[in-house]
Length: 458
Image (cartoon, rainbow, N blue to C red):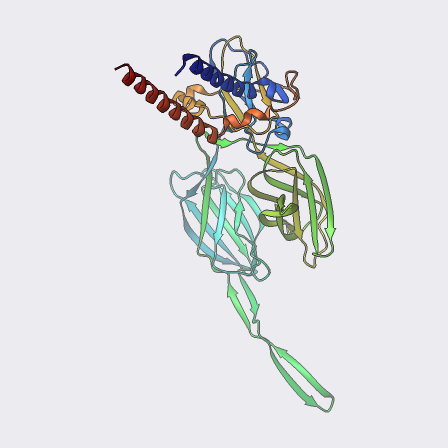
């Protein structure tokens, strides 16, 4: 084969791959963010967190995120969820024995607990009982080894409302103390339960007909299986996912008279969200709720559920309990919707919402005398594949990155006004295999021609 032909073919290949490099160079991206103070004295790991400005423009798979130095050279990075080292409180059982139990006046009992040797003071007390549908008042006193009896808890309420809903509270938090002995007083240990069935007797007399109702009443003692004590100790620091509250772009609430629901719509900037918390003005409610996100189906927008849960707040009888957060797997969406089912209850007054989600950071190795910029805002690109995860894993704890911030988002002055999509096909797997096949075919033809020439010369 003519050498000139081969040279031209090689030039065409080099031109194609140069075009590919140009397509993913700094000029292909619409937005940039400077990495603040990225200069280092020696090579070291650096982490920069993505903010809401970056998330608003990144594509769904963050495939268009790139990092370049000030010379326009691409820099390998690892995009990961950020973590923090935090101390954790770990519950530890506290061993104790029942030293005494006696009845008191006014239908009450008192239980004396003695902590075993070397056991820490208790931080929480749990009354374990098989009973349902009850309400009891509990008071706790404590006595240190060298002290007098002092009140720790007065008239705490333990309850089970199973006949209405699956709501149960049998734990009592204790204040910080040094008590080695605890006196637990429980009021109204015996209650009366009326049978669910009634006997009705109809009588007729001169004054007319009368109906009498009668019930069976059962006296029920408050059965206690045991009283469990727990102390909380500070564990070694452990890695925990870093989460943050993301700003909300818009909020609207409206009743749906057709379904009897309160509909809450929350606008976001496509940041990663994993939980939504409502600010509710009302007290004493239990409502089922569903979180939905928009999706496309047959060319139109539909709302699809991603999570459901129960919102509640109880402020009654000296007790305060609430849960107004709905958690779900991480989502990026411009809008979220929460449907709160009111049934026949008055609609809730929802005054606002809070969105929380994980923090993602780009980790890379910074070199001395270099500045770095995040680039994004391109379409049709595949996600880059780097070996930064393996490098950081091999370096271990010594590669803990320095955390830096990204500057404000700005327009890329080098942007060409388009994402040179004509070169995107060069990055596809189809092109790769087609190129390999073409190269093998060219090699085969070249070998065949060389062999034919050799035979002719012989």
